[in-house]
Image (cartoon, rainbow over all chains, first blue to last red; front, side, top):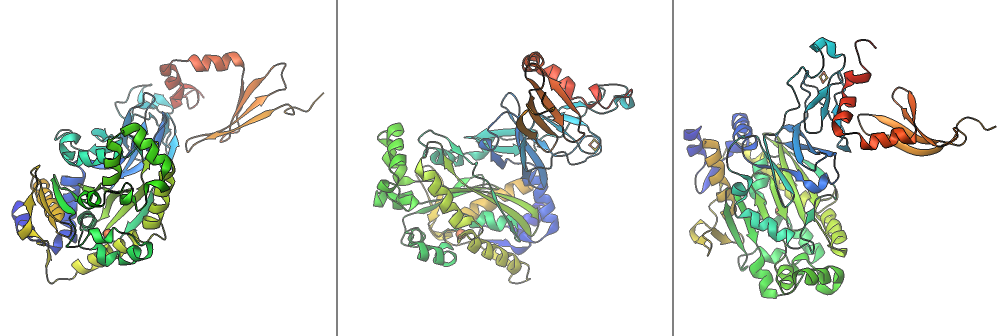
Length: 412
Length: 78
Ligand code: FES
Ligand SMILES: [Fe+2]
């Protein structure tokens, strides 16, 4: 694969077959989705002991459970007897799961509790079997990740600088916690997952693709993605990247401008922030929430979170939900309505992006020109005070960071 | 003389994808007891306050043993 990838991934261009080749997709499943840390869900989705939710990790059907002691597990939804699917509901509460095929029963930690007519196995507790588990599960600020590699970098190592972006989001909660419990919208998308991951911090497209929503809502965000903007695109390492809009928001110096509102329109939230964070509340409310793509599938887009999971080489699902800030008061309701307005069934933001993803997929399936260009801003990249490569708001610095890490994983 | 069940207080349905159980507080006896019905088989049983109290204090391992399908229900001798 190494030699092949060297041919396909260059600093300034990537080959179209990366988005269409079945063999490459199979390799990605092995080397990325079933190796590295992948975002699965949030602890707030299983708030009570014995809660569970169905999730995806790559092509895997996963049950995220919270056991009676509060620990979160990622079980593979497959019976150890003859492989039947064990859980069928999207969510529920149960300390144990009974397979509908022959009645084998498991604790919600995956351990086998028993099976009917046990004489057929010589009695009870005779089988060293259980449901499969994602070998490593870890969470950061409640965001739950799974890794199929029994060993490797820790979640903290994988997140690296991106952890600070999650902290920024959580720092907008007066109670220092976020929840992702508003429910997930599911958008089936006929495009390779990488087109989405690359687009999430592409600051070059918003003025074109999102012109209509910016126009209708009178949003000031569009202007942040222009050549005169002081916002930067930052390669955070490990494939993560962000559009850092803080330089622009600092210029305006207006709390809640990042949310498209003013402090007096969300008085309870602002009061709660000042109560908890004192002097620092203003900075937090001026700088706002992160816009960060965490490799390979977690996109935090200020007010909402996306979980991208592949389905096939040319198809993926985008799960989207509104962020809920603990103690967020009236802001939470607004976050839900803004989120519905952008990514809901009639939302105006994600529909536009998805149209581009699907057209992009159809485009790359044609044979020439064979390459996708990712050189924008290569000549004007800089290194910031923390050693990260940055480009301007519209540069493809994030994509180049994505591909560098992709290559490392695929060559491993 | 009242009809059986006339003094019942329905508590509700407790169900998930694995089981459906209806629960009522039965008032036909001389004091209250719980009537629990497995809606998938129609079988029901009464649990009196002391039995319920015992359930509350059952250690988890004992409860797990009850969940073994071979423990009481799908047995070679049943
Ligand atoms: S396949 Fe699950 S009990 Fe047989
Ligand atoms: Fe977009």
